[in-house]
Image 1 (cartoon, rainbow, N blue to C red):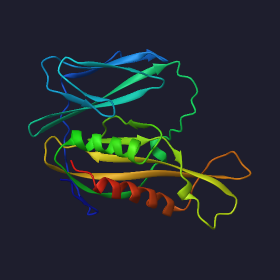
Image 2: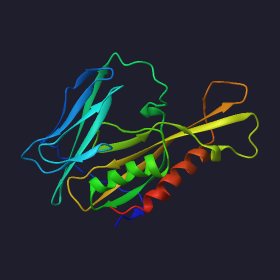
Image 3: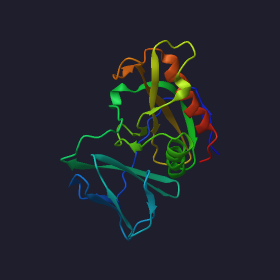
Image 4: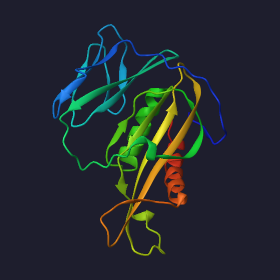
Length: 231
C-alpha cells in the first residue's frame, strides 16, 4: 500500500544499475527503430512506458526524436535502475509540445512509501496517459538517483477562469520526479512539477503563466490521483 506525506525528507539513496538490459542501436535515423532487450539469463525487466520484458525478449520501438528509456529490475528486495538514450539523427520538426526541463516549476513535494518501483512507474505512467489524458508521456535519464516521467502539454478548459479577459486558452504539462532506492520497501522523496502557459485571443504566441496558483492546482490534481494508487 502506498502512503503520501508532504513532510520534508533528506535521504541518500543509491541506484544500482541494471546489468541485463540494453537498447541498441544507440543512434538511428528518423523513423528507424531501436531494440529494447533483456538478456536470456536475467529476470524480467520493466522498460518504463513500454513493457515488462521476459528473459531473452526484445521489443522494437520506432523513434522520431531522441528518446530516453528507463529500465527497472526488482529481484527480491533489491532494485536496479538504469537509463539508456537513443539519439535520432535527422529528426524533423514536430508539433509535439515538449518543454525543456528548466521550465518546470516544482510546486508539490513530499515523500512516498514504495513497495514496488515497477508498479509505481506503471501506475504513474498509466495515470498521466490514460487517467488524466495527457498527450505523450516520456522519461528523463536517471540523474542524481532520480527519474522523472514527463508529459507533453495539453490544453485544459478548466484552467480558464471566469474573470479571464482576453485569454483564449491555457495549456499545461507536468513532471513527476521520484528518488530511486536500491531496495524495497523504501521511503523516497518525490516532486511534482508543472509548466502553465496562456494564449490571448488576438495572438498566436504562448506566454508563461505568472500566477503560481495554476501550477499548484494542477500539481495537486496529480498528487491526489497518485495518492489513490497502490504500489
